Image (cartoon, rainbow, N blue to C red; front, side, top):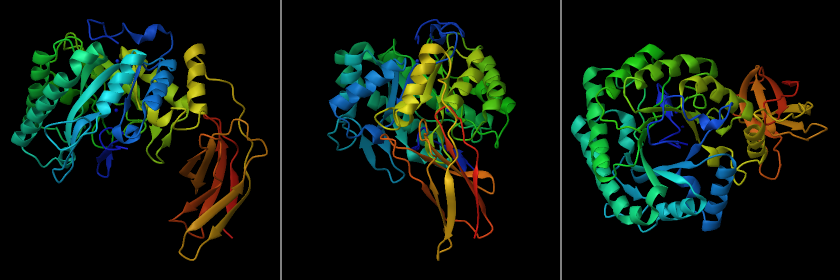
Amino acid sequence: MKKHKFISTMKFCIFGLMLTLSCPCSCSSKEADNNNAYPTVRGSFVQDWLVRNWSDARWDQEFKDLKEAGMEYLIFSPALQTDINGNNRALYPSTLTDNSNDLYEICLRNAQKNGFKIFISLNFHDRWWRFDYSSEWLNAQMEIGNQVADELINRYKERYGDTMYGWYWVWEVDNLNWNTSERRQTLANAMNINRDHLAAVTPSMPFMLSPFVNYRVGNSEENRKLWEDVIGHVNFREGDIFVPQDCVGAGGLTVEMLPEWFSKMETVVKTKPGLLFWANIEIFDQRFWTSATVDRFIEQMKQTKPFVSDMITFAYSHYYSPLNVNRKFHDAYLHYLRHGVLPEITVPPPVTNLVVETQNDGQNVLKWDAPHDMEGVLGYRIYKDYVRTGELLCDNNDNCRNTFTDKDGSRKSVYTVTAFNVVGGESPQTKALMP
């Protein structure tokens, strides 16, 4: 549970919909929960394309912001990434490719300074998403992952100790392409190649995986049977973590579906003593590649809380960091973190003077004037024929774009625009008919 990917965690789900951390100890399934009466997240993913040019100062401030948001875990991108043509790119100096950059060093250095624990991702090959490979090919990829693990341990573990905290198995599993016993055994065997090696060389480091689902390609009971089969054959150790993506951001599930799907997965995790069950909460909206408002984020956590012992998110630095997006997201979540409720923010007044201009190339260009009071406004939502078709967020400096181009419009289309705030409050719709 994205997704962006992004590809490895922003997912593109099959049929054009390939949608795209607590105690490594003996916690019970309901034990952690952050000591709060209300749910919060304790870790986040981050991907290399976002951090590629970050300085030490930027890393340090991002970790401080994450800590202010109650977090202590970070799951970082694959250390070795291979594209569909077989070209390798490493995030550390590796014997497996010509590359001298070292994103893991700067991450671990600043994580140690700020008291964070890092989950290391090994290798990933883009062919994974094609599902046209043999078990031999997949097993060979796992062996490459073991080589990466050995290099990372030799390079970092002695210096960074418990900061280099756990392993993330980045090969995301969907609920469509593993629907036979043979393929599930292939999956379990591949996972064991990594798990057994990592258990031997770093017995204290937990192992995490985060699968995803799409309700359009299978139901919750079928997904439960999938994981019952796979988990039953994987050599998980006490403290390992099964943390499904909630798939709300990528559109694989709705908020209302979460209890049904997570309750069924919980029953499977309980059959494996010592395996922890967490939730990966998606705080983006893949339709528009924008950040989810904080009310949706909180509702996702509330719906999964009864079934899991902890939560992480995809992905705070991408979608809520005050250094990357409008600070209103971070501030509203901090208010919730401290008080257990959303901040009270006035619903914005409507936009005015919405006009639609039809271009010679068939595109419709919408233009409008900002509300008379911009206090609290986070952005605008655009509706075509009363279905949301676009979303614009104000930038870090509260500059808000008030034009939108619909490349597939027609003269019969009916457009409306609203202003909205960070907790989901939305103005009345302002309507413009085609001229």
